[in-house]
Length: 95
Image (cartoon, rainbow, N blue to C red; front, side, top):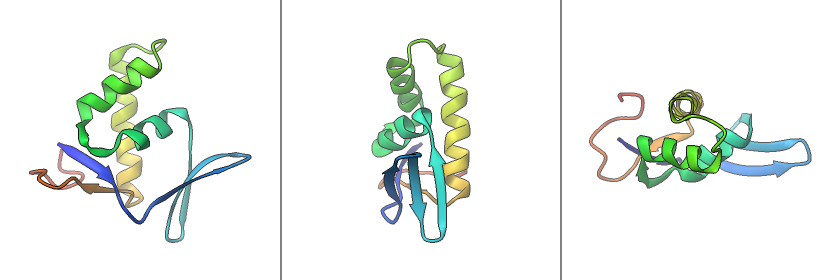
């Protein structure tokens, strides 16, 4: 499954951290969330995003990275931050 950032969600940095903004919803994300968000380009698969995370944070084992990506995608999906990439054969949340 391939996902991409919803075009109507904005990423903003404030002195207190990094935030994703969608209509009236503002969610603060940390380092993991930022790496996942920046990797949601419609080209990287979920497995590839987990691999990107493990390369950027080698202190974490690959299984932990996969779990973090899965959890982060669930949070993003719950807030309406994701949309299927063009040509993706699954709906968001169906994977």
